[in-house]
Length: 483
Image 1 (cartoon, one colour):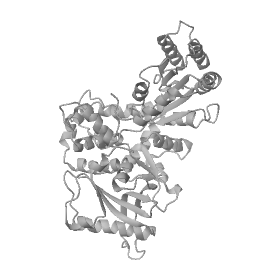
Image 2 (cartoon, helix red, strand yellow):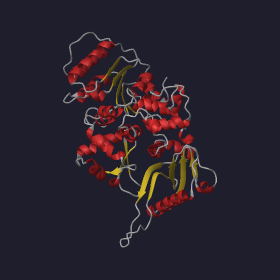
Image 3 (cartoon, one colour):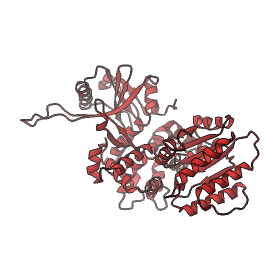
Image 4 (cartoon, helix red, strand yellow):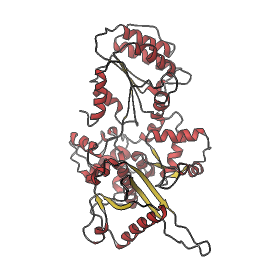
């Protein structure tokens, strides 16, 4: 049973009733459920389906493609030597089918892996679609791949024969907390929202990762098994993740390793210094690919220009890897459980909860009642200047992890706190919050209303300084269904 994806399924199924052939691209992060979505949407009914082979040579890819033709029912044929010959075989196979008004769905999975060096693959795909498939009205060609950057560069943004040829594209996003809760309920795991949230902070909304959670085990027990014990399902995931997405992943890993050490992210110049990589087009391309694949985000602070953009690592699993998996140098099989309530766990939980909030902006807007208002999301940092003579700080610095700048002359200044019970605002914390708000208003010169918005797991302790907070949200608000 497929969880969620109602809009995506409806989009794919509507194509079955179109009056012309359709060219569809489904892309998104590795393990997000692209293949499962396509198979479920079309009830596994394909006239031809094929999956590219990771790391295979062109000769092996062509051999595998011919085997897929055999599996689809094609008679024996000579081995194709080029992709042009391979797609001609596919076209001859399709031509033999009756024109009966029923759509014939072709599904090619992991398409980027088929594009080996000097294979002329993209040109051959272009010719197959433009010269043959479009001459009929009953073809649905669905391509899929985890290498989001390849799909974008070679198909979506193609300026050759495939330019503007896509009739439908779906960028499949990770599950929301609401969908993960539905998934956990379908597996009868028995978890409360707090446990699902903790799992999400480490796994993100990746269905494949959630599939390894076993009934009868707590989240902590599952994590010990999945990440730290021999044979754990996700022990080797980090290397497999980046190797499968990028042909030369060392540059990408170097960048995310540097970003993992800076919670708020780094500017391009800082990244170049930290990674010791050359400032060239390869570096720019790596940043773009990491952003396209959803591992990092690029943002500008309010009042800054695009050249001052900051890159921030936002992938939940990758950050969990750096905080815990890579730190388990002693091979402790219960490393996660042993770190519970320790500083390393507390620090991680705070940062992870902030990321989850950023991944659920639509739910936050809905809970605050302005989902229809156009808005933009920012982070903001201010380093207080020092007196040139005395060296003393003139104004205290301030750091705000989440700002929602709204078109209705309002800004939500979000304070995000993760605890295992209600959060109490002390006098010291109240002073810090006031300083952040006042500093932000003073330094940005904003004329908008700035509302302090607390987002916590279990809410604020009533009374005291909590009464000075303009808006309050809890983790329950993050579990709202997407609109």
